[in-house]
Length: 108
Image (cartoon, rainbow, N blue to C red; front, side):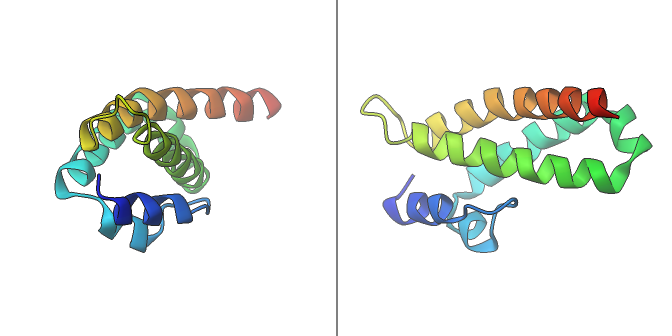
């Protein structure tokens, strides 16, 4: 992942991934993120159907956090740029969404 792309992704410390951060990612990374996101949505379809607005907000927060964690992993000396980003993102997003849903649903 180019340095400029990493910087843009790191600077996006909001609850959602900023358009600038998304545009700095390679098309392969964006495609992989979409595929992982679709799989997570399938896993949690019941929660999505029950409260769509709430779920989409929760998903966006988890997505941004997973992207930040994945971006940080690319700084490791053993990292392989986009491959590392995709691998860490694919491992992190499902876990974050599942934990967030468990936490939120246990409170309600």
